[in-house]
Image: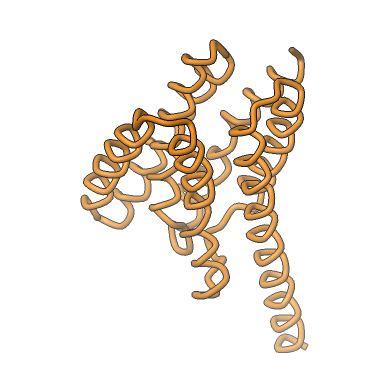
Length: 196
């Protein structure tokens, strides 16, 4: 029970460092799609929590929907881009429709795919576009930590959906952290050489 409370609480905190960094520093390098999918995914996890009678999944994901929606607001305001809201509306309705599609395999595929897809836009920004300027390492460290907790809970409760999603989330969040650390270290070394 204590682990469940920890996982739910840390889950809620995940977008906070990224939102703070976006407000204080810049929205450059931050994927708005990641926030859109995170908010949509939190809706699905809240519904899943209701179905499996897991109050911590319900509460933490409702708060996560609110925080991710605020993150979308911050990014769209800074970029003067109202298309982000349309993307959010379409993606959330699509996920909700697919979640209630009959069959446990369809639901499992959807949740695992969306958990994977949620991190892909940010991974693309840091790996392919090589832009880590606005990325908060804290957000992705919280993501990895939270998902490690959810993996343990999934093993205890024998929830294969939660387990598969957690494993994918930890792996992708770790890749984002590694790329940001490597890129920022390389930039510091370049600056040190130039200034000497």
